[in-house]
Amino acid sequence: MDKKGPLKIGVIGAGRIGNIHAQNIVTRIPNAEVGAIADINLQAAEQIGAQFAVPLITKNHQELLDDASIDAVVICSATATHTQMIRDSAAAGKHIFCEKPIDFDLARIDQALQAVEEANVKLQIGFNRRFDPGFRRVREMIADGKIGDPHILRITSRDPEPLPLDYLKVSGGIFLDMTIHDFDMARYLIGSEVTQIYAAGAVLVDPKIGELGDLDTTLITLHFENGVIGAIDNSRKAVYGYDQRIEVFGSQGLLSAGNETPDRHLYSNTEGVHGPLPLYFFLERYTASYIAELQSFVDCVLNDTTPEVTGIDGRIPVVMGLAAIRSYEEKRPVRLQEVDRAN
Image 1 (cartoon, rainbow, N blue to C red):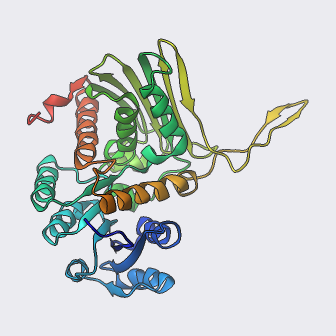
Image 2 (image 1 turned 90 degrees about the horizontal axis):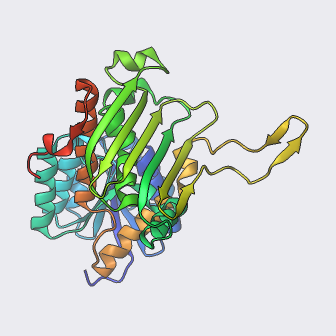
Image 3 (image 1 turned 90 degrees about the vertical axis):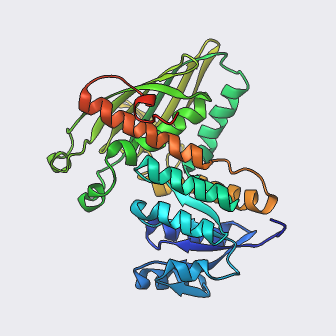
């Protein structure tokens, strides 16, 4: 688009992540502003709208889309609504930032991506961890050949405590809710596609999670087209905090990025060497990445460039999640082609 800014954004969904994005747009993104908030819970929309003096507050997302002054939308509503919101936004000619996952169903994802293509609008998916400074630097150094040919990838992602059961009921399960970030990170770091997945899992944290038909502890192995072997481990409860680490071992060295802590002090005494625990949860750990991903989206719209995380980048981790589900259920390695016959 030929507009130089500020980009006027409508936020659809006034929950926790919608609030974060609205706040970041208002306070941290100089070439964007929030022009509207929509949520079926009008009170939630009004709270954010009043805080940031948003001119249009509505419970009907279509009213937001009908506003000609809105250039783009940030979709933060429930996952089950994402593809409809994407199609409606594309039909209205709005550029789109959508939180992950796009959907749990590949056919609905493909319909949404087709609508975006036909409308010739931008679509960026909210895999914010790609914008974490440490993870991003590791990826850049791998691409620059600093460790030669990558051989082994390890990703650890563990929550400090399980999410509420009401959320887990509609989350799509651990592979499509939690591990999906790690699936995206695996592709991002290695720069190659995964061909086969083997997933093991258990319920070791909370039996109620198992009663929902979900898992809380998993270990997944990945085989990449370029020969790299990867491993992802997840837990819904790490008693010491939010555990987020990556490691890539190659023919010429090792790259890693570890946990962020409130400060960098170390205290040594006769009992050992002590330091601070990791930051407690994703809001603190990934503050910078949430700002950076939105800045990237705004810039790509204003400068007419390709989003850094495309719709296809949003689709492939869903395929990986579906493969992991089948692998766990059937207790065998699953090739991604088995769940995605279109490719």
